[in-house]
Image (cartoon, rainbow, N blue to C red; front, side, top):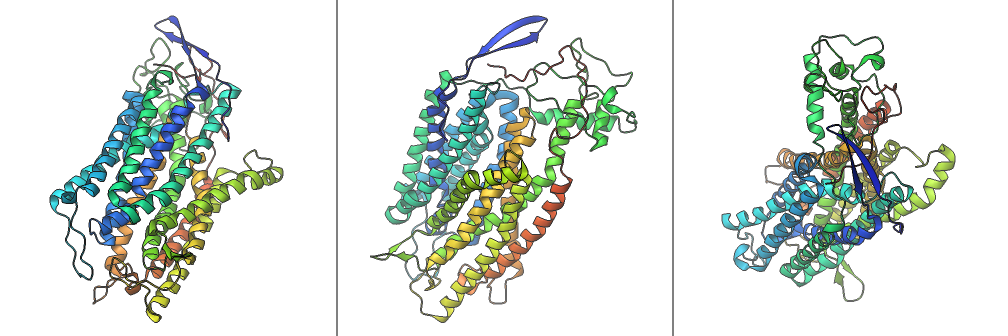
Length: 598
């Protein structure tokens, strides 16, 4: 996983601008800037996860919110943050570039964390603590909620810029046209996920312990300070970074194809479209040339040349809203083909979200004492077992399974990314069913045996040891190892080069849809299953609810989604693997795949 110690070779770019040959030299620093990039990522993740890991407990214990209210608020917060990545990617690709977007987003994220820290530090910014034995706790005032939500708002703005740009910006520092550069990019990805894993482990153990056992103000102040350090690392390396000039959002190009296709909807495609369609490719394009495919032939009509179409001197269309190149059309087809897989992935995240959310409540009402002295594990720290399952499975898969599969399939990656995603989707319903079984055991013991304590929700703590929650968490971690890493690789490989920031936001938008759907699902289930006494499956006191039924329902939805995914995967065509090549009708016959520096 170590980064290559070879600095990337510099590259000369030849651009045809106003008939002049202008030479630009990109000085790729490669591994030299990695201490700043990786340091920034590590402290960023430590700060972000340090705040987010325990927010559910913070809202229910400090802000006295009901579990369903807190869960829905966090789902909306997470969903809006993920959806905001689409805006961040658009602004980055169209106007500001990745560096400026990351700089602004980092500052906003730090300020948001600072606001949340102040809500824990200053007594007037949160409601008074519940009195022990009291049936009703004081709710937060409108002013306290306004300050809390303003902190969430700043975090959403920050996440919208950080998530779609951090990975591409790190990869930009290596020359993709040299062997050392390509190895450096792969090493960067490995280090990126290593820092994420390290940050989650520290957040869900050390920081969560401080928040639960020491005090919330210190527990939030530590990750806020780490985020400040992350900003320092990022800005110190400014003069060494390669900064890519914004080349326009792919959303504009896709919109042009759709408009042009609608305008030419009554036209007929030629018998051999690959020989007669508009095949211009800009010399500034960083995308690999895509072959013509027969799917979505309606969109292909956008590249039909008519007598009314006019060309510029460089061969481009004078009206890009009427005539688009077949390259633009095929790029849009890539996105359209991805959508069914993206939807299946979003539905997978619904199951994932429910386990990660409700296992905290299960842990709260389970016996969490371990070892000598009856030390209690913080409820949110149980998520660490999911991460351990993820890490161990990933290591075994990469070091043991891939070499074995490579011999069988003759594929460098062992199996295709879609098959890898499918394995994760098979495991997820099994983990949910196991979660339901464990919850049935926990509830049965709580109702038939003496309680070992009282939870903050005033529900009794079951004598079932919380260690029984570990298998379901480890299994969902194994599922994530296949499905999530598979999806990241899928979106990275299947989007054209200029759309990879957009691809990162595409994945986050799927997670956003999951958050909103998860929130809606919880609300609907809570309303539909409510009985005359006011109790529901998702009652605040799990002993009076039926969380096990909820797990079984989500497992059934996961099995339906698995069937849908298998159909979509069978239909899918990988980018560039099928189709006919089209000669480029442009002054330059080859695509210059090199970047343009600021």
